[in-house]
Each structure stands twice: as C-alpha cells, then as structure tokens.
Amino acid sequence: MPKATDKLEELSKQLYDLQRNVFDKWAEATPSLQSLNAINLPETWDKNIEFGEEVVRSSLEVQALATQMSIEAQKQIWEGYFEMIRRTQSTVKKS
Image (cartoon, rainbow, N blue to C red; front, side, top):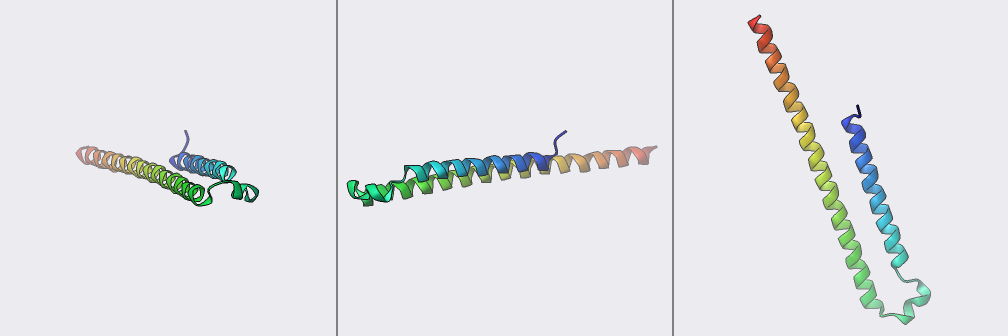
C-alpha cells in the first residue's frame, strides 16, 4: 500500500513537471531577438508578462489546493487513529 508521503511526493513531482512544461512552452512562444523589430514589442511584452503571471498564479492555486487536501487527509487519519485508541482503551477498561 503506498504511503501518504509517496503520494504527496508524486503530486509534487507532477506539479513541478507541469510548471516546467508551461515555462518551456512560454519561453518557446516568446519572440526571439531577431524578430523583435517586426512586432509591437510593448504590447507583446505586456501579454507575455500577463501570461506568465497567470501561469504562476494558477500553479500556486493548484499547489495550495493540493497542500490543503493533503493536510485534510492527514487530519482525518489522525482523528481516526486517536478515536480508535480511545475506543480500544474504553474496551480494555470494561474488561
């Protein structure tokens, strides 16, 4: 059975791979220095910055959600564990 830490590590790796892939695609889409004279640089620059900000913002939101889900799962596991201990203790006391 996979451990929760293994799943969290895999999720972190997937998020990193996603960020890296988006960054690489963004870098490829950014115009090269040779073609800068043929385009509207300020407008293109602003759009690239906005796109980059949105990618980072979305990525951070996904990471925050994944972290919150991981914390909630751990919380439920620990609450269940301590509840089981309490029930076991009360059963032992009755014996």
